[in-house]
Image (cartoon, rainbow, N blue to C red; front, side):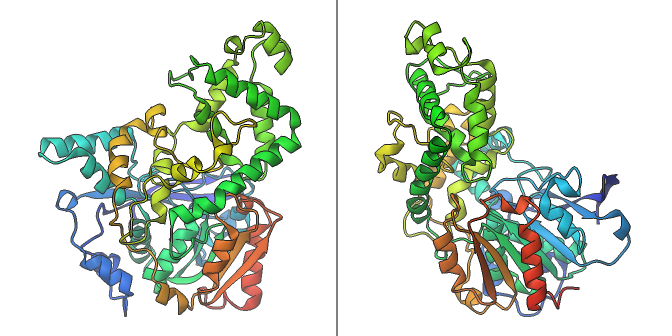
Length: 490
């Protein structure tokens, strides 16, 4: 185990580790690379190992970073393992400040050693950003290959079929092949079903929170369900804070007049403003938006009336505050997690597609005039990616050529084995948030109805971020324990 450092946070003993994994898992398997005999392999594991790797990626490795946490009193004790499958895509694992800083961790530390891997491409695992994707394109050009196609092929190596192989290899090599419990948040639930399809023998039990994908997967179907919820969440925000409807409209009218830039020099358009609604599926989102727009105007007392009065009634002269622009930039740029929007729609790509994904969210938005830039009240996007983001956001611009290639592609790795999931024997406890703005509850329940050994707790008490409080994981754990589903966890 490649130990980088060992230290204590308040209430947490922490070890940092790193291992190397193949950039391209095709042509091998975690068991083969680890030199392990793992009994009867699943059909998806065999298929993945039989696929031909990309010659451009053969022999290339990347780093996989992970942390292992335990409570100070349990250092040296042989506790069972729980591995966290982070949401995203392209999101790093939590960086806890204490057991209480992320609610589920406090409960998990009572029972487990907690494994926090940064998924490939993010956090401290070999990071994919604009500079790296540009370097991939430059290398392709120097070899006489098409840069955009090479970049697209490279990005496809950072999806769920590769991520679950990294984690299976981690389990085999660094934890002695010991079965572990998995906890998937959001996209981590997608990884959970992919893992149960390919490597079920390594899992003692699984928990998911707001993250059961619809199987069969379809990006277009997801957005057809979630755009109406985005509109409902926006309207609920305006109903909660009626003055904000006027404030958002005035800001949008000012942006429509042009010549507003963010601190990094990129343009602030109305459509980019709509992206500040990305957090609308989280519990405190209306309050965060209220705080944002409360400080929008630079003149007078910050009210719409004073802002217009100072501008002589001319909307094009209304001044937006520097603090507001700084916050909008932070909320709508992707320097911290460039793979989040880059891979967003491809998490729904399962095997060979009947048609390209082709900007599914943009197509759905175009069918809904209430989401147009000129509509008032202005609707906000709760989670949707658009082609113009790769023009207006400097952190995403280097990915634009690859996005054009990916959106026309139909060949992706297989994720879900429906027959295997129907026969699943690994206990699966799923929290399904009834009002989830990102992962439709009806689609989640439809999938769970066809997954063996699965149990759903449906609630409207929590939003998509419910796991990060103190209640959700504790309840799931206790239900699984009391049902006997954790009897085999060692």
